[in-house]
Length: 193
Image (cartoon, rainbow, N blue to C red; front, side, top):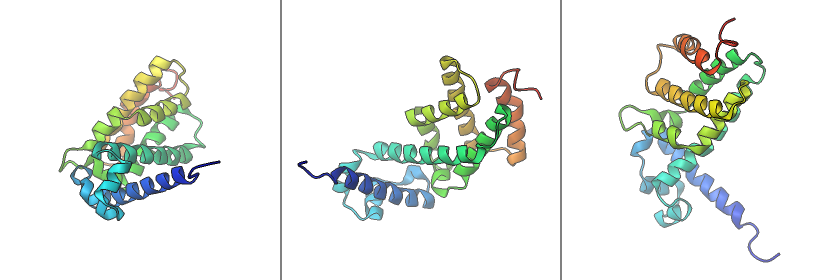
């Protein structure tokens, strides 16, 4: 086998190191204010090296969001794995996701209202977030692909709304989810107990 067989792994490690450095910066200030120069300095690399891995800030932001979305999805599904009732699974999954994002200073900064809340844009445009949300909706029981896609898109918008305009507390958000989300995502057969 010719060539550098470790090249792909080195690239992955370097990209993760850059994303970790970006995450530390996002935890300290709103994500929208973090520039490539700051990220390169925090990662201990030159801007040229940074641009070798991420062609621009948008590409870096997208890679960061996708990596974190996968991590959060695993955390959320682990937290609700024992819940069989689709209604409770939906509510607890959404509450766990909100909690997980809010407890991460790096992710919460994406929804900072003191700057342009870029988390909302990323959530709407991300194919990874779309796919993960669709997988969550499928886990609740619906099987019609068009309904799954429609409901998943709506759930992303609800989550974004609650990140930008949170309820008074988790009890208030639970009540909103029970009243407005459960009937839409799990019509009639699951809404009533």
